[in-house]
Image 1 (cartoon, rainbow, N blue to C red):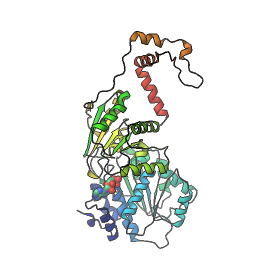
Image 2 (image 1 turned 135 degrees about the vertical axis):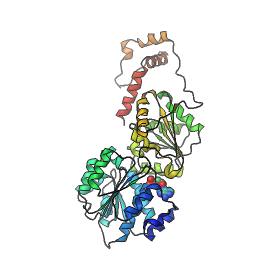
Image 3 (image 1 turned 90 degrees about the vertical axis):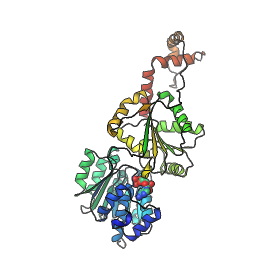
Image 4 (image 1 turned 60 degrees about the horizontal axis):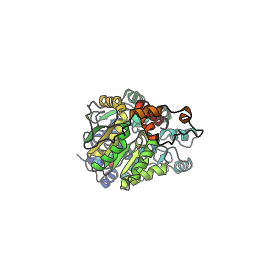
Length: 441
Ligand code: AMP
């Protein structure tokens, strides 16, 4: 079955044809026709399954039916959790709407209000927005939402996870009650159900696959490693497998930067993306990764949310995610639109509880193994008598200098001292370093 059976207008079909897509994905098969007919739709589709077209095509179709001359206020609103996703939806609107005369634009935070106000003054048909900045515009009365006929909530689960629920509710409350609403989510929870119940009317349910089940085409591997050997393991894995386009997840911004630097020092072309990077920096990282200028993209969860790059061959969870749902979103960045993909997760001793939660969430047992051919570098052995001697240093050598940095005696035994402490208190030191990581999130 092709796209022609959904009742889409010729101009939209021309737009689809220009992309070269001929066979609708399962979510498109289930969602497009009811949406073309004006029904509310709940789409439960895993990430990377073609859900953007599932709402953009019917949205453009319906807007195209009644092109109002001199219409200045937006008629369709798409809410997305991140600015990257807003850009991607905007790109899809431009691609599929190539043969229409509809105007569209994005609104998101972290950039000046001025250009967005000018855009709204000039007039747009479709607005793609993140909730916080849209609320700003609403409060300043720089946007008029009284003409909204269609609302789409994209990646609703992520919007909730990012704490946007109140913003979303406030925005929806300000929209005309007579409208068509579509809600898409990779996972479906009680909270999403409650949100949907309040804003959709007799929705058509378009559900593909079992919602927690990761995309079948993705091979998932879990490798056990001491946390001190993670970077060596990463270098080893990057060498050993044919990794063309690799997305690596780090837990913190600081960790992502540090890892990217180490990869660069190894001669691996690497870009990094996290919420401290400016919008132009993020876009150029993504663009470079897309074009293949960078072989590796290191990202944190929130920044990676909207990444839609075709042909990511591997996702590596350098740091295991903080919640099981993030695991699904992360690995969904590979294996997009039915392509095969590999997801590799590094698991340290501290990560085992998280791994169990991932297993419960996905309903699959993880096979934990050592990476074939990799031996973690040995921590040099220290003579225990020397260790004891050096852990009992005089107080003046143990105190911190006024610049806050740890002072070493510089007596040539420093290495023995450091390793001795680590050996005796390894658990404590691990906790300390991960606490710091959390602080730097
Ligand atoms: P999405 O889930 O919307 O992020 O889409 C994932 C990827 O699939 C994007 O790169 C889309 O361009 C692509 N895609 C969307 N629809 C189709 C289709 N019918 N056939 C092949 N690829 C598609």
